[in-house]
Each structure stands twice: as structure tokens, then as C-alpha cells.
Amino acid sequence: MHLIVGVKHVPDADTRLRVDPSGTTYDPDGVKFTINNTYDEATLEESLRLKDGNPGTTVHVVSVGPPRAEEGLRAALAMGADEATLVEVGTGTELDPLLTARLLAAVIRGIPHDLVLVGRQAADDEAGQVGSALGHYLGLPSAGYVTGLEVDPASKRLHIKRYVEGGEETLGMEFPAVLSILKGANDPRTPTLPNILKARRKPLRKVPVGDLLPALETWPGGAKPTSRVTAFQLPPPRAGAKILEYTSPEEAAGKLLAALREEAKVL
Amino acid sequence: MTLNVLVLTDQRGGTLKTASRETLSEARRLVERAGGGRVWAGLVGSGLDAILPKVQEMGPDSVLLMDDPVLKDFQAAAYAVAARAMLEGIPSPRVILAPATAMGREWLPRLGAALGTGVATEATEVVPDPEGGIRIRRTVFGGKATVSVALPEGSCATLRVNTFAADPRPGQAPVTRVPVPEIPKEARAISVESTVEAPRDTVDLTQASIVVAGGRGLKGPENFHLVEDLARILGGAPAASRAVVDAGWRPASYQVGQTGKTVAPQLYIAIGISGAIQHLVGMSNSRCIVAINRDAAAPIFKVAHYGIVGDALAIVPALIGALRAERP
Ligand SMILES: Cc1cc2nc3c(=O)[nH]c(=O)nc-3n(C[C@H](O)[C@H](O)[C@H](O)COP(=O)(O)OP(=O)(O)OC[C@H]3O[C@@H](n4cnc5c(N)ncnc54)[C@H](O)[C@@H]3O)c2cc1C
Image (cartoon, rainbow over all chains, first blue to last red; front, side, top):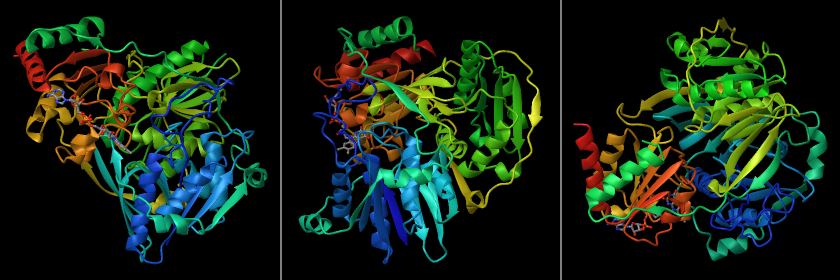
């Protein structure tokens, strides 16, 4: 079974952001980048568990990103992925979620794939569009909000659990398919030193974005983004909580309820 | 300018979600802001007759109904094809909106990919773009920043739940039945085998307008009922930090944060939660945040609007007592 896992290299959750002079993104200077998006790490861990349980399974990680994204792919290889492909994007290329999905699809079309897995969303732009869109571009069934999966390689069938508001669904699916994972394994494995060394020798292919764009011209949406960020803004710093003074728990409770009703008007 | 809006509603499970009502109302307001245009409500599913009046009550100009047993379960590939067929009757300039429920968030990117248009997720503001299409605002980086996004005519956007007011307007929009188009083979490769519903009296965390969350400060699973009692009496949903879930006090379905659920209710009460960044990214967009924590220096007070510094095991029972005394 051939698994493909899409990953994105994103800033650390606790990094401080500054607006870039263009006003439409953050200034990458001084930003700490995590290895990979948390949702992707959990997805990758799920895939590696499938690999552990099904001999002969391969995991190929793919990413669209600037040269620094190579670091994320090396980390994925060190965790146990077998191969990596980076669609390398320079600073001049504007991307949006669907163009990213088209680039991923263009690359995945050339790689054997039984199952394509992505995280629920990236921790930076939080778009969460790539999974469903990949389903369309690859002509495959897709399911989102996946919370659990079991694979039967012999029958080429897949049983997945999917979150729905107020419950959970179990789906039967044929593969190939695309899944976007809401919640994967909570504890992604930590690469061991021998595996980190081994990862340096695993194949990592770089595809310049320019090699893929011309072929996208004829796809719906084409080779350009179809949405455009016009402003990136940081909210004004919050004043901090209004601390309610009290002498008894009852007084505290009374003051809070009054504030929520009369001031905040949320009760 | 004029703008026509197709609202794809979410009624998974058989009832029209509040989030669908919110989106229908915002579509009305969007058309008014544009200075003209019409709102179509698009319903895809099976056995939808009972909810038609609930949709009409939100004041769309027309209702498009695609009701067929093959569409009983939500399935992005099939529903994207269904929505495209509905769009055929809607003149440009037009945009497509849906609530940012699990269904809407899965449906619209697949539709947008097929249409070759733009898609935006979890909009908190939608305005007509003088250049055509719409401009939306949304939060990114777990609420640390916001972006404005321009989407051309023909694009799709999901609207964040609990953000837009649902105000009914009497109306009797005519209902047009749209025949089911041919469903592609990839859409037939997937089927729902079973659905497990959460117990009736619980409110879904991501839909709730009030969320009461407890952390390690509650000291042990034996005290966690305080969080649930307060949630119940407020008509909200209980939630937890990851520390609580990791300790096995409550199941993972309770977890809010980076590796749990993202919520943005009207009111979020954090009890005995320190406010680690991984927790904050899941709740900092809530409209009003209350923190109850023994430590005045806890980071949660930086994002909270109201704070009570004190022992949760004393404050929360007093809150429950006061609310019970009001509603005997
Ligand atoms: C990759 C990653 C992902 C993560 N994802 C998540 C996530 O999704 N969600 C999440 O919540 N966390 C997540 N975490 C964990 C997060 O970093 C924190 O460890 C966690 O949120 C802490 O939970 P807590 O606030 O309940 O506990 P603590 O940090 O231990 O805080 C307990 C608080 O209770 C207060 N307290 C103690 N006694 C009382 C009392 N009697 N009355 C009132 N207050 C009291 C204390 O002052 C303290 O502030 C993640 C961490 C990592 C590394």
C-alpha cells in the first residue's frame, strides 16, 4: 500500500508575529519555524502506524513551500517516512489554498498512491481546504474530519470514523481516497539518532514550482491563485481581564453574573 | 451593484442547524449591502420537507430543493456535483455561502475546486467587493492575526458559527425542485455504515453559544461535575484542557485547543486552566472570556475579559447556587 502524506512547514505556535511591510503577510524575519504543522505530525504518525501494521506499506511525504520546508521533510523522513518531494516555491510565487492543492495534485499524480492523508488544517492560515480540493483534482473520494481509520488492504476497503456535530459517523470507502484527519495520534514519535542519520540518505526530490505551473493552465482555477489576501493585521493588544474584587464566593458569583448580563450582554 | 447568493444549508441529522439560519440571515444582509440581488437557499439531502418552513422563515427569495435518497448522507464529491447543478439557475454575479460546520468546511473546497473559483474558510465578516465578488475577514494563527481576503465573483465562503445573528423574516419563498444530476463514480465509492449520536441532552461543543471548560485546577475527576453542572444550567457545553484529557478525567471529545476542538462561543468560562498557547488557539476568538484561577499571574487572564482570582472549588459552587436560586 502506498501512502502519501501532505505536510506544511509553519511558524511555532508561540512565535511573535510582526506585519510585513507589504501589509499582506507576516514578516518571516526572526520567526521560529516548527518542524511541521501539528495536525500534519499527528497525521504522519497515523500513517506510520499503518505502515508498522501492514508490511510492504510505503509513506511518501509531500510539501509545497519555500526552501526551508526541506527541514520539515527531513524531520518526517527521520520519523520513518520513506521518501519526500518538495514543490519548491520562491518568494515571487503567490499561493492560495486551492493553488497549493493543485500543485500537490500535480505531483501526487506522478507517484503511486492508494491513500492520500492530510491534516485538518495548517496552523498558520487555518484554511483546511487542501484535503477536499485534492479529492476533486485527483478524481478520488474524499472525507474530512476523520477521527479514526482502519484499512483492509486485501479488499481495498477502508473504514473511517468521521466527526459530525453531535455524534460520529462510520464510513466505508474504497481506496484510492483522500482523507483529512481531524485528530490523529496525539503523540508523534520522536526520531532516534540513527533514524535522523538514515533520513539524510533517504530520497528527497525537489520540483521547482515552475515545472508544474504550465500544466495547471488548463485545470479549473488555472496556474494562479483565485483568492487574494489584501491585508494581514494584528489585533490591538487586549487590556487584560477586569478582575472582580470580592469578599465571599457568593459576592464573586453575583458580580460575575451581573457583569455578564449588564455589561457583556452574553447571558 | 447586485449580488446573488446561494446559501448551502446544513441539516445533517435531520434538523436545520442554527449555523445555517445564521448564514441565511447574513446572506440577506450581504445582498442589502450590495444594493440588490437575491438569496437562494439550496437544500441537498433526503426527506427535507419537514425543514422547508424553517428555511423559509429566514427570508430567502427562493428555495432550491434537491431531495433524493441517494443524497441521504453527506458526501463531499456528490454534494459538490449537486451544488453545481443548483448554480445553473442562478445568474452572475453570484457567490456561494455555507455555515462553517464540519459539513460546510468539507463541501465548499471541493465545490470551489470544481468551479475553479476562490474559497475562504470561517469568515467572520462578509462585504461586497466594489470590484466584484466579496471581501471577507477571518482569523489566522489561532486568533493571533486576521486577514482580509478578496474573492472574485463566483467564489465560495464558509461563515463561522456563532458569529452572525439569525433574524427570521416572514416570507413564503417558492420552492423549486432540482433534479439530481449524475453522481460521479468516485462519489459512489463511499458510504455511511453507521451513525452514533451523542446523548440528546448534550450540546455540541463547536456549536454551543456557551462553553464551560475545566482544567487541572479542578484537582481531580471527582470535582469535574462542577464544570458540567455549570454548563448544563447555562445551557452550554462542557469542555476541558488537554491536561484533563491526558489524565483520563474526561474523554478526548472534551478537549479544546491546538490538538482538540476550536470553539468561538459567545461566552467561554475557563476554570482552573492556566492558558497555555496550545489551549488559547482553540478558544481565543470567543466573544467574552471569563477566567477563574487561583493564580493572578496565570496567562489566561491576559486573554480574558473578566477574571476571578480564587479557588474554583469555592467560586463555581457559588455560581451554580446563585443560578439555581434564580430558576427554582
Ligand atoms: C503539541 C502540543 C499540543 C497541545 N495541545 C493542547 C490542546 O489542544 N489543548 C490544551 O488544553 N492543551 C494542549 N497542550 C498542552 C498545554 O501546553 C498545557 O499543558 C495544558 O493546556 C495545560 O492544561 P491546564 O491549564 O488544565 O493545566 P495547568 O497548566 O496545570 O494549569 C492549571 C491551572 O489551574 C490553576 N489552579 C490550581 N488549583 C486551582 C484552584 N483550586 N482553583 C482555581 N485554579 C486553580 C493553576 O493556577 C493553573 O493556572 C498541548 C501541548 C503540546 C506540546
